[in-house]
Image (cartoon, rainbow, N blue to C red):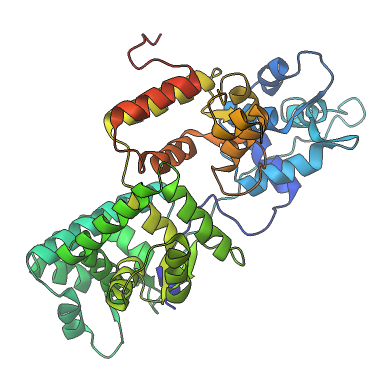
Length: 424
């Protein structure tokens, strides 16, 4: 496996961080931007009990413009959890500790004491790892490169190998840029920086070399997706998914997640991937399986990113459907925090027309929990849903609905919104 071809979001971490370090981050942020934490959280604790729910705690932190990872949030929840009620946070204790950055206590006892300086630890540059925003920009660039090379029927790997002087699969940045120029592809400094961070290899000097083999693997995988044969295969598969109705794509994603339960890295090997398709009821030939492997095994390590496959299968929401999804989210996000909770959805989500609610198999509350669980395929963790997760869920649903009118009416009925209603 190519260790330089790894891409993760900075928001993902492996271990729960130290709560003291997280609090230092919170205090540094609060002091820098002069945030009145007490004023922000007071509306969440109207009874002044000193306790609030985990969901409200997370929402309050986001209102403070604190961008914490799930694990950092978990560390804070563990530290300030109410011993008598596991789902409550001792918000009074949290506020008291944060406000220490503004008031130096104990001066009457020690007038010479100095205030503690809180500093946020900066994340180190890591080869192969890009923030989500940069990763998105790089993906657009790679897709454009694949389009050019396929159109011109150019095999970049051959050009790189000619410049590979004794050091297997690597070239200098200047050589990389020159070869791309020969292919009539001019890279600006930002593009070269992104490619270097993603495919860079440490060298003896201060500059990094570029692993052209991994780079070519990814471009060639994208080229496969643009072939007529592959487009025909994907079209046939989409028709199969539509036969399963609105939850067709979601059903396949659930199968893949269960098969990936051991390490949860969103990847499956070829055998697992094909088995998942068969379990769903879709048969592929060995040739088609190899096409899928080539297209979604972007670093040529024998495993497939099934999340990327799901996104490719379902496509994106068209403008009319997207407007309805955003309209529903805005209605739920009454405090405009960018996050909605189970409580927000409880009073608006209309499950009366759900088949199992009508038959009496489940309650409306059960239907709501099933709906929330659909966002990550696991149990409700904190009941918080962001806009991108909301859109992602409805992209899956949308893939099985051909008629825009049906999708719009469904959204209106479930969330009590109107397509052409005036928005203040």
